[in-house]
Image (cartoon, rainbow, N blue to C red):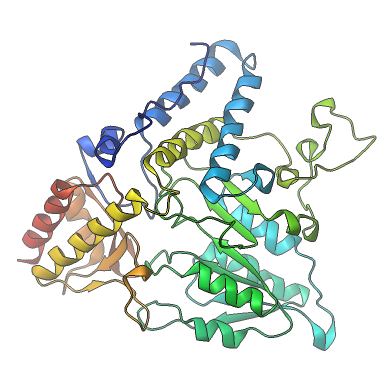
Length: 402
């Protein structure tokens, strides 16, 4: 093999062809995309191509790997409606969050010290890097959420003052499944003089986000959940106007304009977001994610009339209805306005008097994949899941609950 395999999903593919790209669906009813999603066939083929080349040819095809990985930068810019120069390729969401939290030029002196606003129910990776700023004198303000996990705009607004520099939120809650209205939040945060950082790992690949229309400042996302890429590959968005506001903390040969001359006599940093990439890339991961994201873009995951999002929300509603029909408590966070626009593909449920881990084992025996978070079963459905998958889940839970 002398070339990386391209995406095999047809250009005008529909949701039905999506399932054909997912070999996992031949065996499992897979509902664990909020943890780690399976990769599609086309991504596996691209990864096999890299393995074959590396195995038999060493680094002979390195330029081709680099070119193939750069397709991810292009795909990410298409997904977010931004410039390629605003995308840095990174190993994971945590890396991107730390690049922003630690690289931001904070004023931490005296009574006029800066503050950052975060949500109290955040995933650790979007909380710990901000909490660590306390040791540098930055005040960290945690915003309480509603009992069901929904986020109140008024609560965020009340935490912001003239010294707030960044508001950091997850677009979709990893446990609650609550989806924040980013357009409304961005307008509010900017109107109060702060910048907005978004952990988008639980939203991208399903819901559209055009940064030209919703001018968020920073975004990070690994690709191994809803974007169906391998672990260890993702991207960081930094709006061009914010590039010089971050110190490039991790510098290496890849940070320099003349990177491939391997000289440090003239240390001139790149003028785009790739200055934050630093060193050697995880080419195999980036190649795999580029294929997965390319497939999802062909399905329309970046469109306003997004068929991927529609299928995901329809699946989640069918699962909710089915579980409630057999008498199980189901939790889906909605705002005080009870808007379906707050919903995502994530929901949780419990089985009275049965350990959630026991329920998960029961489901795995039937080749149904879920996860347990905070003493609840978490279901995270994607667009390729179908009514047969949902029926398997409901039937298995009927037996478990009888």
